[in-house]
Length: 374
Image 1 (spheres, helix red, strand yellow):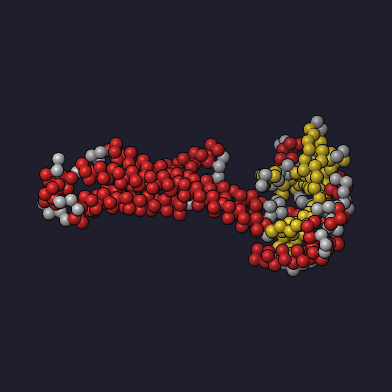
Image 2 (tube, rainbow, N blue to C red):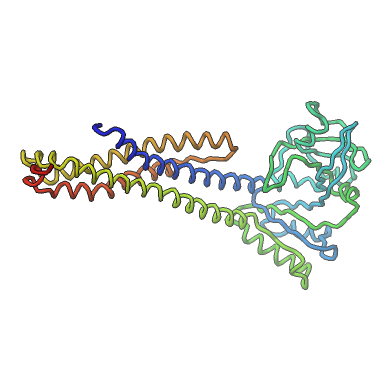
């Protein structure tokens, strides 16, 4: 309290260090959670089969065989393209997906209004459509689209459902879409070739087994064309992204921790100055009975108080700045008690480690020399 400005400047190093660790690590963890949620939006227990070229297309018979494999819960063949959609004077290009009734389960798609495609719609080649939230807002505004009609490539389609908003997932909007029955979609894109199929496993624990089964079956379909198709497991993508996220978190945490070490060196410097300034005081204390342990504790407590108070202020500053950055830059920031507690304990440890040397120096002073020191 005798040197308020000096104490404040000493704590500033710890404040910056702790707040930097909290902000950077929380941003990294928030980004990881954001990516994980985007991958989960693609569907759960998901396998994606892609084929390249018309000679390795997946026929109805092959898709039926895939659906009968052990561990497969549902299969959704997909045909995709871009189509011109019009209503009154509003016209736009929209992503078209032709698929079956299982798509809603496989890709975790929810309907907010109306219904999804049924097997009967596919069988009777019904001209019906389920539209995304953005598509509904573009063509119908605040009106209820269910029961109304859209012109898709010049053909009138009845809107039977509106999808719940999913936002963007890995750079692709899930809301600016039109989903139609597979048979109808093949006519719209003028192609019967199916090059993409989504499979949902019954259990997350079985996904490696299911993927192996699918790869064996695909190899039997196309024995000499292993380069013409791919089978991707969503779990592998999740594991890769988790690994990258963990590396980023550790790297950012390490960079921020350097500022904590700099703050610790600042504490040591100030405490050494304090020992020099208070040499006479130490001599008086020792002359009236203070032991080496008492002097050691005095300076160690001061170092810990400086680092501890700096750490608490740093936590508050880190959380406050993190919230501000989150709202201003639309970042996902995830504060965890582990990160906050770890950064605080680290700041205390830095205070103890860098406070030991000056405290030890003070405790070893000769009382006679200290009393004569000017």
